[in-house]
Length: 394
Image 1 (spheres, helix red, strand yellow):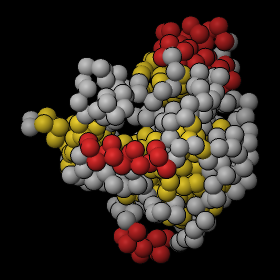
Image 2 (cartoon, rainbow, N blue to C red):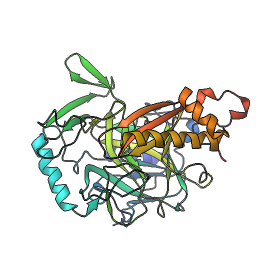
Image 3 (spheres, one colour):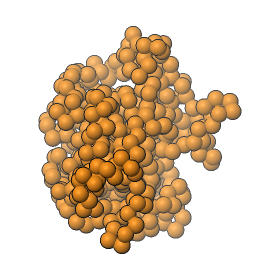
Image 4 (tube, rainbow, N blue to C red):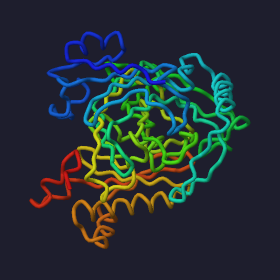
């Protein structure tokens, strides 16, 4: 079912954001926690789209390219998206690991025809698993986006909820986490977020910084069917990449008409590599995205990629972590060759000398590695127009 699309000007936006839960402190048109975002990319004078999270706009953790859009936008427009906690918002403080297991079993039972997406490039097999426990808001249909295009997704702002949780399941329910055999008893842990300090107390005397990012941000897969959100892949999806913070840009290859973007799985804090199943996860009262169709990047990109103010980040996803490393490195070499004109053999050497390989996550079947290419290395005048946040026109 297609929901109503709201198109608001600046005054109406400021009038309605409180009621809609899009709690953004704005100073001179910029969100207070995203100073790195350029003013030219935060132009509120045009139409603004707001996509709330409810039973008509949110699904369990799966992708299905036959879904009708929850929202239709034009290329280059901004959308404010609300997400829920996992299991359709049931995960709230007080929920126990037994509650989570019972609710998750209900989701799996309701989505029995949901599979892992088979992909020779990631090593993933078509395994019947049911949906992931994260709910996803969308799809957002981008007018004019077609297979072969690249979707440029600018993350402008994130306003997280006031609490979050971390869990590992009981192994008699589901064996997940890299040390599951050593920690067989499940547990869920709840934490309150200090919005002013942007930290939370892990234990008395131990504080962890809050650095919210979307654990899941992706587009529909090319083949029909219901595909679990658990494995990330060519669609992006459940990448769990902690660098996807406000002020960064994600590039996603488009596989279906309209792209059909979804997001959810709100992460509030995470290290490089989830290990016990979850990071600190909760909800986003708002994640603000500018979504633009790019047709000039088809020869440069064929896989999800990230840009930060300081690095280009290529990603590898594979059931074998070593193959994830190889994929991230190959993608880095291809990017260095296609964007900077570097000879591929020299790019291989550059990767060994200047590029950092980091573990993204270890729990999502197709394990993640990301390769960070420092923009600061490209000091020559011939590269001046290439070291931008947005990939330059080719």
